[in-house]
Length: 190
Image (cartoon, rainbow, N blue to C red; front, side, top):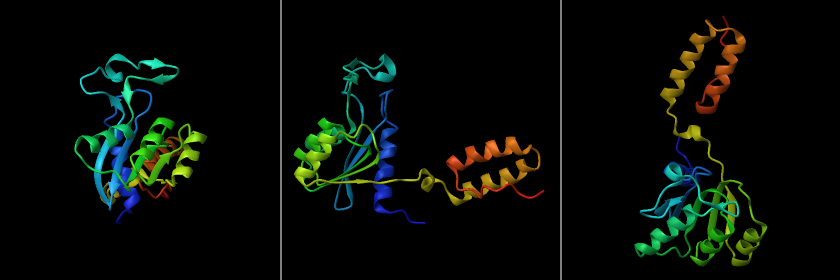
C-alpha cells in the first residue's frame, strides 16, 4: 500500500520528534516545497548547551526555556543554508505555539499540517487566518510503517497463544498488539 504525501511528510516529522531532547514533549517539524523536504527540526537545546534529558527542564512561567521549538529549528535551518521557505508547507507533530505560529507566517509558509491538538492558541488561529495560512489536521496511523510480514507473524503468534492462555490474558495481549500491528483481532476458535 502506497501512503499519501501527507502521511509521508507527517511520518517524517514523527521520526524527527524521536530526536527531541525535551522531557516534557517531543515535537518534530518538516518543511516541504513542491513535494520535496527542504528542512527538518525537533525541539531541543541550542547547539553546545545542556539538554533537558541530561540536566532537566529549565522552566519559567510554565515553559521550558532551555529548548528551541521544532518549527523554529526547521526555519533556522533553511535560513542557515540559504533555502527559501516562501510558499512552503510545514508538517508539525503538534499544533504550533503562538511564537512559532508568528515565525511560520513571517517565513512565508502558506500551509500548516499538524497531527495533535496541543494548547491550540485562539490568537494563533486568528493570525493564521489573517495571513491566509491554511491549517489542516492530519492523522497518521503508525501502523503504516509495519510490514505485512510482521503483522502476519504477530497474527500467527496470537493464534498459538489463544490455545495456551485463558480468555482474559489473551484479550489483554490482543489489545496491546492492536496498538502496534494490523491484526485480525479475533480469538481463534479452539
